[in-house]
Picture 1 (cartoon, rainbow, N blue to C red):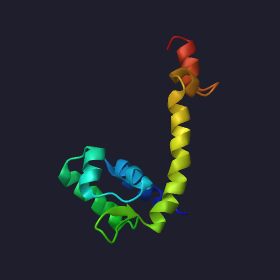
Picture 2 (picture 1 turned 180 degrees about the horizontal axis):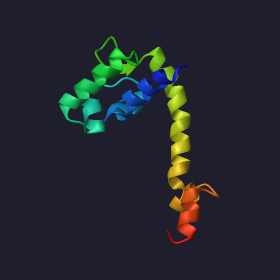
Picture 3 (picture 1 turned 180 degrees about the vertical axis):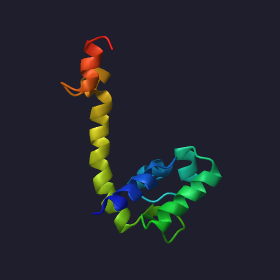
Picture 4 (picture 1 turned 90 degrees about the vertical axis):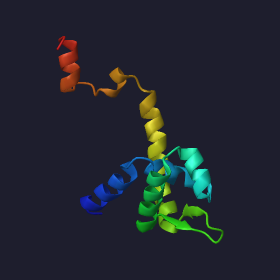
Length: 113
């Protein structure tokens, strides 16, 4: 994969509320109102994010008018779920544990800098 493609998907998911919408849909279809209640996004921003996810081919509207992940969305979910697990472990680390041993930052901290 070319780096620009990776940057594009990270940019999309990094937009406010986008990853939350995507994450809510991992459990199945959801109406717009249910998404709005779960995500807590203003309606205009939620509309924009759902549109962007649809344009990216990650979300579609099902037969009853609810939003769900597409095949591509479910494939991406297979990548995002392990990343979420990693993030949980990382968040549990103290700031000191996050600094690699021998890093410049650690050396400056130890010298009082």
